[in-house]
Every structure is written in C-alpha cells, then in structure tokens.
Length: 222
Image (cartoon, rainbow, N blue to C red):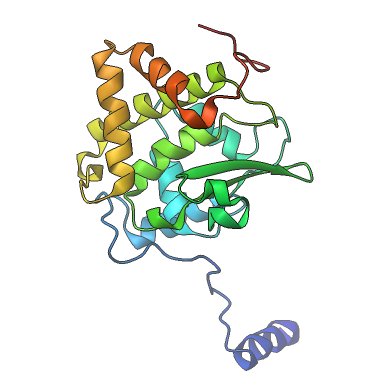
C-alpha cells in the first residue's frame, strides 16, 4: 500500500496520471468512420503502439482488417523480414533527400529496422486513404526494389482503397490530395478490368523508377 501511495505522489508531483496516454490523438478536423470513437481508438491502441504513437495510424491499421491489406497490417506489426514492428510517422521527406520532398511516402531501412515516413501534407487525410498507402509501403521490406515490386505495391494499394471505400464510403474526401491519388489508382485498376495492366504501364513510365531493375527478390515480372 505504501508503494502504491508513493507512486501516486510521484505521478502527481510530475503532473502525470496513472492512466495517462502517451498517444497523439487523431486531429479533430479528420473525419472518422462512426465506429472509431475515442473510446474505441483507445481500446485498440495498445496493439499498434509499437508501430506509431499517432492514433491516426492506429485507425488506419485497424481499417486494413478484412481487406487484402491484412498481410501488410501484419507486416507492419512485426511479421516481416526484420521480425520487428515497422515504425510509421509523418516526416519532412526532404530531410532524407531533397529529391523526396514531393513524394507521398518513403520506406526506409536503418540499423536493421524498417520505417515508413509519410509526407506531412497528408496529416489530415482520411485514415482509410492512409491505410491504402500503408498497404503499399509495407510491401517494401528490404533495400532492393524493382518495377515488378512497385507494380505489385501500387496494385495492392488500389485494391485496398477499393475495398475500404465499400466498407467506409466516408473515406472518399475529395479535398484530400491523398484521396485524389487513391482514386486515380482505383480508376486505373477498373480501366484494366481489375488487373494491373494500366497500373503497370504507369509504373514503367514513372520517371522516378527509370533506373529500377525489372525484378527484385520475391517479385517477378508478371
């Protein structure tokens, strides 16, 4: 009892609470699906706390459940080649490389740990759009990349976005630049009759990928 009292006094002294949260809550101007009340978000955050301390990403990860992005969700939780949770955060990408300043996201591997950095311009994007983006980025798990890998990742992103819109149509906030990206991918997927035909053409024509090899470990040309 004395130890509990002492702990309570220490917490009080430093302005803390035994139930204090270390999470950054979802910004109030981000529209969430109805099920994602603050109480519900708090209840799932322990599962995702090793991935990010920002609850917007906890919601995004949770939205990947029951979609084709379930593999990516598990990869982000630690079922990847490093066997460690992937760290996800917003970051000024120009700090990594000025050439990345306009990118939407960058996957990174540093000292045996995987990171996914999201451009801060998407800080207020719907979590459903962030979920689709994370489904893509979680597929990049090593320092190798290829046109085939990017084709697969972009196609996965389009498929997941399509599925999320069926479950959470309110995610389609047309004021969001990230939603614009996702809708373009969805259109390419539909144009190709739900194959990667037009996404593949777009990837191969992307100036940023011009130096990539055709294949990389785990990704063959299809």
